[in-house]
Length: 432
Image (cartoon, rainbow, N blue to C red; front, side, top):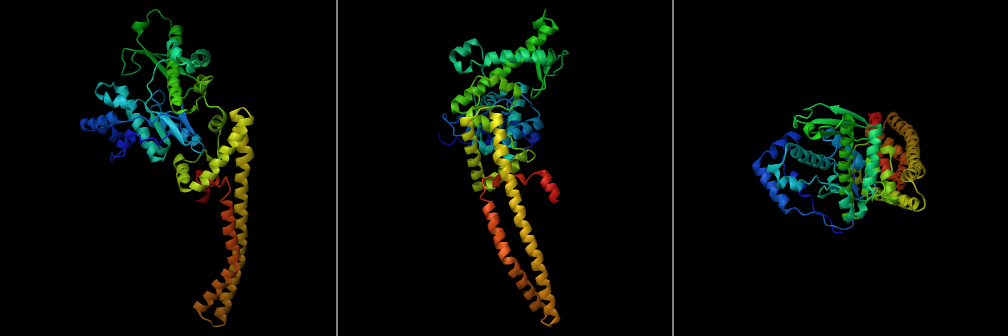
């Protein structure tokens, strides 16, 4: 597949001088700027269709979509979690773009919530650019279409979604906390009441708003059942969109949300090596900012490629003969990565300790030579030169050996991971 063109909305964003949320709101209030955006949107081209090598479609819990958390902090956390899980194996992350093109072209007709969704999407782009992850992202403008028995006739690859959705409805009704909300709970819709749906496995609490006059005769229990069903069917529609995007680019759909994974079960969820890679957790990197990981990746290109090739090889070999992505990923970490990191750390400490001992001995010899020179009346410059010569003669072979040892360690497949781990806040705290 040919390289995709830069995302049109990101190109526009890079021309905006100040990109704080408040400034973006002001920019979107400018008719002149909206007109410029609309021209860009009209000329925008979708990514070329076709297989992407080692790409993953970010599914629910990873897609920064409009159906999920909308606060900046929550969405930044979602971005961090997504790219922390995929950056070391996949080359590209395909994201749905909230139909930004359609929203921009129909700006004057948009409701307030639609404008908020677009603002959230643009704010996501600002953050992606800031942490250096925008070059890993590909945006697809696939429309959101409801899934029902009619659509399934033309899309048999979605057939697993409806039974999965029905199972999820039963689970939420059985385990979820369902709360009736009063009329006017949402200021934007003062004539509507709501049902709040809470569950430990939900990324964010779901809320269904309804017009009481259109639901006369339904008991509170029946209203809650309708709310759960409507909420799950919206999730099903988003899952279907992700699957369609995956088929467009021949890429698996990856989700880091438990309930979303239940929906994807039996459809085109990731299998084989891709499933293992998505399940892999690297504890050594958990506390490291994604921006730091990407910086190290860019700065240490050769070391990163050696690391990635080694991980991909281990994933492919084990996925071919074993099942259970979580089990395989844990094995790879415990059998390959953890011992290698321990070995690197031990070898570096040994090399440093050897050099330290040599430095101590050399310092004594250097001091002795300097002192003797001064006592003999050689003068300060001559005495200092003699001391340096003695120190260099002592340290030279040890320093050279230390450099060689470090160069050898730097060729280790896991050296990149060790380098990245040095950006851990706890390590920096100890150094301070």
